[in-house]
Image 1 (cartoon, helix red, strand yellow):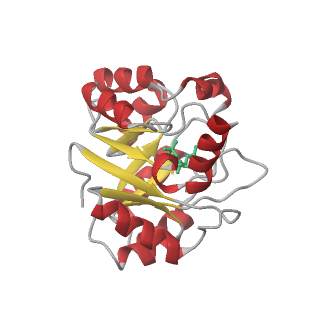
Image 2 (image 1 turned 90 degrees about the vertical axis):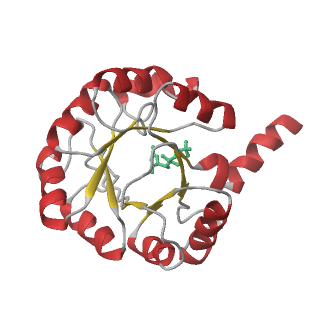
Length: 222
Ligand SMILES: CC(=O)N[C@H](C=O)[C@@H](O)[C@H](O)[C@H](O)COP(=O)(O)O
């Protein structure tokens, strides 16, 4: 199943230290997002994906975050994680497609295997134009700005809001559906992403993380 053009996709993720961690909360979050008009869901881990698959027919971008002190890549680092999330019901496999060091096979090979062996489309989280080009050439269907600001090379971007320049550069130079993701935290920024040619926009924290939303308001209150 494809992510429709013009879709708002809602990322429903909560780590173990978040009071909303777990499939019960994340599937409720996905239902709320769908009721509000989301046309896709991004979710982390087989348990959450299974629970979300049970309550919605929307396309699910599944990821599996696994941290390993030896390597910076943690979003679906290998084929084993991709297999788990595909089996849990993800239509599309999201993964880190940055050029950073990783355990196991190179990302180009991983993308090919996910397409051939799992029959799933790939959603490539990247941080630079070059990485976007490489992921497209390797067979990823969707190219997303997710990791701009979160790699050493792009760290300075983090404080500057979403990477609209990267979005525009990808739209101009990579012939693929380009997805805006990462710090698109207001409706105006979502509209701007579509004006710049985004195929879809993924919003996480600003919709599904009440702890961070509360912190923002509290800061304003002090
Ligand atoms: C860097 C990283 O690990 N990003 C993650 C990817 O799955 C999520 O933590 C983000 O919430 C998601 O990308 C949506 O972005 P935002 O929450 O800024 O709307």
